[in-house]
Image (cartoon, rainbow, N blue to C red):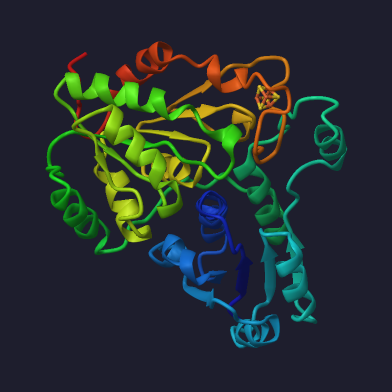
Length: 342
Ligand code: SF4
C-alpha cells in the first residue's frame, strides 16, 4: 500500500522554505510515497509547485482545528511528520489518533533557558535544516543523504514580478540588485540608512536597485528610495508569487535574517545576509555571504528582540556600510547576470 506522509508546517516563510531539503530527502528515500503538506493558506504558494509535494491541504483563515483535522484525516496519512512542533500542530496530532507521529526537535532544551535568561549567547549545535532532516530520518528509520535547498517558482511568478518591475520603471532583463531591509524584529534589522548607502553605490555603478518588503515594512522602502534617488520601492506590491519572481530576477540580493533571505538562497541568487542578535550558524551560507559582528553578547536571542537589551546595538552597528559593500561586490560579479566586471 502506498504510504502517505502528512507534513505539518504552517508558518513562517523562511521556516517553510527550509523544510525543502528534508522533503527532498524524503522523496528520494520513498519515491512512491504520497507527500501531503499542511500549511497556512496565505503561505501555500511556497510549496504548491514543489515537485516533491503531491498535495497541499491549506489551513484556511479562521478555520478551526476540528474542521481542519477532518480534512487532514481524509488524506488517510500513514505517518504525521510534525515539522511545526507548536500548539497548533500538537492539537492536530491529537485529532489524528492511530497514526504514527514523528515530531522535529527544534533545539536542545539545555540551550533554551540560559539564552532566555541572558546568561549566555546562543550557539546552534546543528543547522536548522538538519534538524528537519533528522526528523525525516526518524520517519524512514535510517540515515539518508541530505536533500537540496531549492525554491520552486509557480508558472506565473516571473510574469507577475516583471509587471511590477516594469510599472516601477525597472527593466527585468537588465542587472538588478534586490534589497530587503525588513525583518520581524528590530534587532534583526541592519540600519536602513546603510541599505540606502549600498543602493547609492550600486546606482553610481549603473545598476538598477529595487527594495522589497511587506506593506508594514513600507517605511523602510520609502526611506531607501528617498535616501538613494533612483532606487525603486516595491514594498507592499508583491505577493508570494511576485516575491519569488522578483528575487529570481535579481543578480544579487541583500537581506536581514528573514523569509526573503531564505527564499533567495533557495533560488540560488547570490545573497548577502546581515545577522545581529540571531545565530548565522543555523544556516548554510556556502555560495553566499553573511556578516556577523561576533561581539561577546551575540547572538542574544533565538528570534530577535524589540530592542537591544544592552542599549548599544553593536551587533548591527559594527557592521559598516564599507564592509558590506566590500562583501557584496564579489557577489555582484557571481550571479545570473554579472553586474560588475571582476
Ligand atoms: S548588541 Fe544588543 S541586540 Fe545585539 S546581540 Fe548584543 S545584546 Fe543582543
